[in-house]
Image 1 (tube, helix red, strand yellow):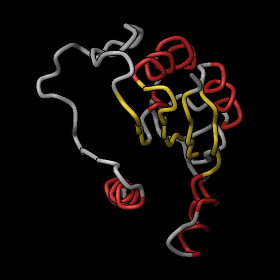
Image 2 (tube, helix red, strand yellow):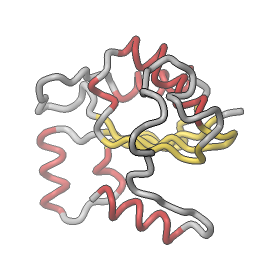
Image 3 (cartoon, rainbow, N blue to C red):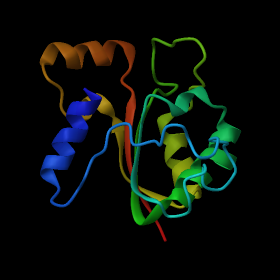
Length: 150
């Protein structure tokens, strides 16, 4: 589903180029949270997309290291799109740090982003009534579309 979503986004936005697996191999610098730009350079990207990844980090790491780094690598007006599991999820896997969806709104705002969209993922439209019911039964991941504020 992730590749299909990016392909649909690329088709809908004139001039948008989507490059799956765009990380250089090997990386020119290790990705170390808190180093300021993750080895990519400041203001290097128009968009960063993370699907079901950020909920593996403690809140203080997200607040103090990861979100500031993501802010640093985005150009002014750039987009941070991500989906995370939250404390509202009823089916919790191991290794996840589940923070409430509303707390995520605060975290991104405090990091210099405007959350233009923040909602349980199923509310954005699902393929079928059955899949919506499935999400409701376990608790849907949340989707965030955030824009970098200067």
